[in-house]
Amino acid sequence: MPNEVVNARIIMAMEKLWTSVLVIREFGRRFTTFQSLLLPEEYDKIIAGKLKGIVPIMSQEEFHNQMVTLDPGVESERPFVGEAIWSLYYIYRAFTVRQALKVQDGLEKKKLQVWNKDFQGKHDSATERMLGTIFTQEELLQFDAGDGFGATTKIMNAIEVRLLNEMNDWIFNRHFHKIDVEKQEAIQNSITVGGDFNIGGDFTGDDKAISNRNIRPLS
Image 1 (tube, one colour):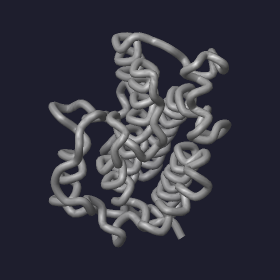
Image 2: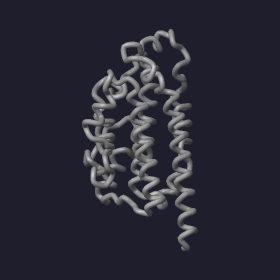
Image 3: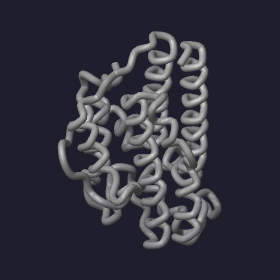
Image 4: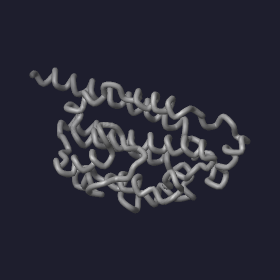
């Protein structure tokens, strides 16, 4: 296949994946923007109805129906974007949808959790392990500075920057960051069950599914 044809196909794949990122971002921020406006101790204002309308309320069925339409056909582009980019995209989607789902669950239970707490209000080890594959512990602590104010948005922005950097590297330098097969399988198994995102579950397998050597932590 001529290089110009390959280049065009790669750029099309990148455009489709990035379009999906923007759709996922919009979906996630509908549920999590309040975390950049309110401190955790102020979340009760939403539950009490004083800030009614700041977070969308929908049934579990409606939430699921919207979730499954976030990235139609994107996986068909995977061969053209490389495993480093695909894994970052995978984590971005899992993190964003998990945060949105926790807010939806919190509205039903009348208790909104901070970003790094799970559905029961305990430490969200699943999210920590997932983010630990691409961020250092120091970076994760920086995201949580200021009582976690706006942490979800900061993390989403950071992953988006990583994605853009990897995309630029591949498009302009023509070089894949390759991921070890065993580690790639570990990260997929930790996030998915039966081909769908295990948004509510815990992670299994290697906590460092993507090594810092292959997908570099933010500097």
